[in-house]
Length: 335
Image 1 (cartoon, rainbow, N blue to C red):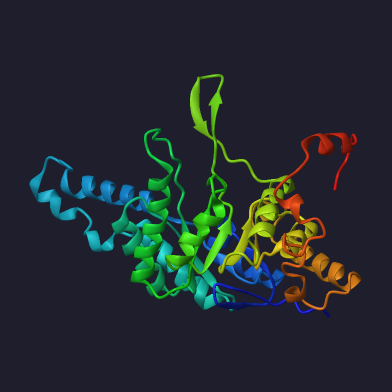
Image 2 (image 1 turned 180 degrees about the vertical axis):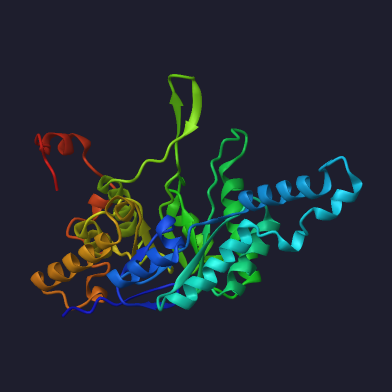
């Protein structure tokens, strides 16, 4: 029986399969089923500061600006202490998950202000999270903002959060940095324990019936995993951080390639939403079979064995002959 153990953010895990931030990871019943199927850890759905601010504004309008017309009736307004906010519910979910699961629970945080990042990072630590993922979801829509300023924003958020909590911290990055390796080096110096590759930005769509721009959620496909695998292969052994891959991992072969390239863990999301919790167990079983067939004794033995440094053709990670790729394509080709 191959040894599937891996390590991420200082956490000893039974295998490299974790549940990415998604609706299934925030509900106790589905989280239990995922643990039963072999999930080694779960990352909770992100706590969005923007949602918490909306809660506060609604409560403020209700309590302070409601004109009910009868002064004596004001005593019937609910007391603020009885009001349960989105934050209250989120922290209660953490407590419930920690009581119900034996696997690590990783909190996910998305802030819009430095005070929000800091305050809510402390909230997640106090609620019992085993580690923290910073989901810095930022679209550089201001055309006058230089790239250095955007990178500095990421680094400063991490630096200040790291000074406030004792949890190991991962930063979830998008792929659109001019020099991704250099950016990760800056984050490592600022205190990152891990990097998650990559955040999937939801894209706006244009509704041709009413001409409105509307957000659309598109679940990933296996093709998206290839970009993650490339960067895992380039980064493994070159940056002193743990590496997580997320986005596009639907099959055991996708996960195996990611580990061979250098992933410490692989996060699953869309495949679980499409096929249910049992998909994780199926993928885990297929990984075991592949390892046995290919005589791998452990995940540690696999990890990074086909990264750029160890690959038979290392230049393939950074340069591809576009013409040769096109000429090699055959109709109906499927890996």
